[in-house]
Picture 1 (cartoon, rainbow, N blue to C red):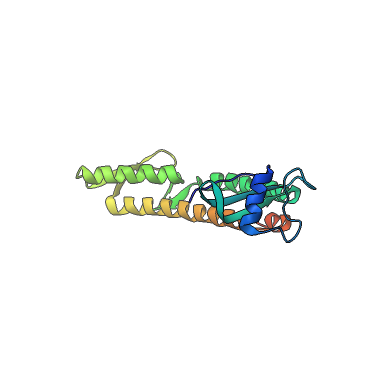
Picture 2 (cartoon, one colour; picture 1 turned 30 degrees about the vertical axis):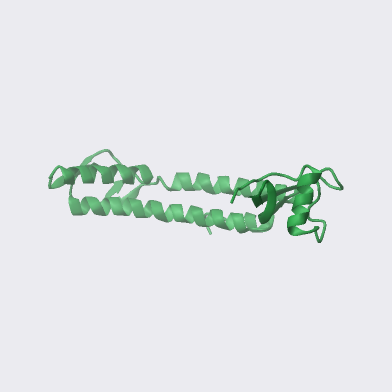
Length: 180
């Protein structure tokens, strides 16, 4: 399957789309430059350079462009909130640690290196940059807590992004919030 995303901007392509899916049953799409300038984006399979089957058709008119702008704005709002919240401090094993993906990865790497070197303990540095000597079990709990905190926030962001993508009105998009 060859993927192509384009817009109907020539009579030949328009004719191929009509041949593949039939004439539009309503005024949902047109040849650009006809009665209304509407872009129709599509994914299609091809046979000898001609459209064989349409996989998906997306109409992009003024209404969908406005909805997409609202969706993009909401995604950016969610992304910014995720970026700030995912790096908040996390409590584990009686200490407060820097949160976030990078912290979890770095602490896990330090734990694994100490374990590989045959050391019985590993030194982590808490949020105040004080050395904390931990057993491998305690170090693993810290790493797991940080990773779990990050994953919960990442899953929340991804779920909200999916809700934004599925929303079909500006009102539905506007009701999506990190806090709800």
